[in-house]
Amino acid sequence: MEKSQSAASKLSPAQLVAISVGNAFEWYDFVVYAYVAAELSGAFFPGNDSGVHLLQAFAVFAVAYFFRPLGGILFGHIGDRWGRKRILTVIVTLTGVSSAAIGILPTYSQVGILAPILLLTLRIVQGIAAGGEYGGAAAYLAESTPAHERGRYISIVPQTSYVGLLFASLLLSGLRAGLGNSAFHAWGWRVPFLVALPTAFIALWMRSKLNESTQFQRLRDADALEHNPLSSSLQQDWRIILQVIGLMACLSVGTYVIMVYLQTYLYRVGRLDAISAQWVMSAVLLAAIVVLPYAGRLSDNFGRRPTMFASLLLLMIVPVPAFMILSASNVVLSLITSITLAAIFAAYQVASLTAMTEVFNTARRLSGFNIGYNVAIAVFAGPTPYVAMFLIESTGVKIAPAYLVVGSAVASILTALTLKESAPLLVEVRRYRVREKEKPTAV
Image 1 (cartoon, rainbow, N blue to C red):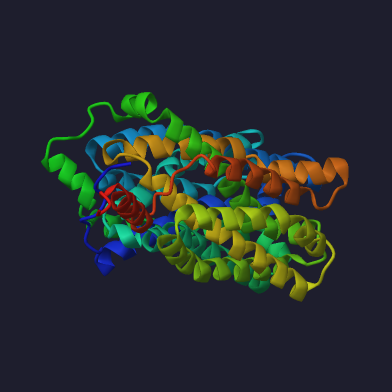
Image 2: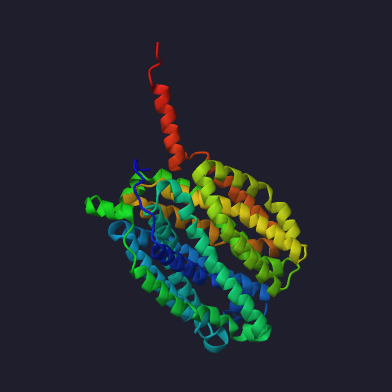
């Protein structure tokens, strides 16, 4: 971690909106696939077994994640070598075009095996693009905002991710209710993908107006950039990269069990219909959006480690009884339980994300963060919906997803034990106490 991390001014409203809109759009595009997985499975895969269809659709969902490390490495190197702004504009363009293309793809009944091949290809492009977005947005905010408010500002990254998910959830709820199941299944699922193109142009225009991040610009002005940041990070930051992977275990699994797969779980395993499950998912996302900034302030004031420890302990205890309730309850109980899970997870998410951005040197931040983040995403997050469905189908244990969350929380809390506190306010307090102890005692 760098010795000097302060000296960043507050971002302008226009800069915050540009980061927020682009990040929300990126995650809307990437995750809308999971929300219409049932419809995609019927359109793009052969056979009549809906369970097998859904597993195939989630397998394609997982494959995209295996290409995220490639995107992370590529955009991490470009971002550390030539700037954060450059990658943020390229990423939003790639995602918008590939998402819109999914909306016009022919189905299996029209072109046969070519249909799932084209779907897989476009998901790979989305995976490469998504590999750079989260780290790019987090690095930009970390390097452009006051150090003592970094947790609050970085909370914008997951917060706007959930705004994108919420928009997708609300849009799909409206489409399902307005079109009816048969029309939505036949063609309505294409609409949320086609919406991506105009949204991409808006996000691209806004991001093209961004200035470079404050700390990166200072390095560039001082001619202190790394010539090969990827190689340098692998050599110098490999321990930190492993810590990021460990912290990402719970962040990855929790995101896709609680914030994505839960909607499918509520109507495929639980007792809710598809529309009710979609509305519960919308409420869960809204709750996370509200909680995240407060969780960011909590980590600023009390530290990243205490916030992570408290939330991880709860994530080791709460999921099992929570999924027992979700598998057998009505809308009201499912709503309360889901929101509780989301609030606990949000606290861990913002504290861990902030800590992961703070532990890297600015010159190598994006390369190191992207490697650890995207390797963990590929290993933990991508397969999660598939594994959750497979465990339920093969074992008959309805609460199997809870065990995935608990196991990942154990891995992350063991990793958190190896971290030093990185919240600037607490680091300064610790340094002050050390200096006071070292002062000679008056005789």
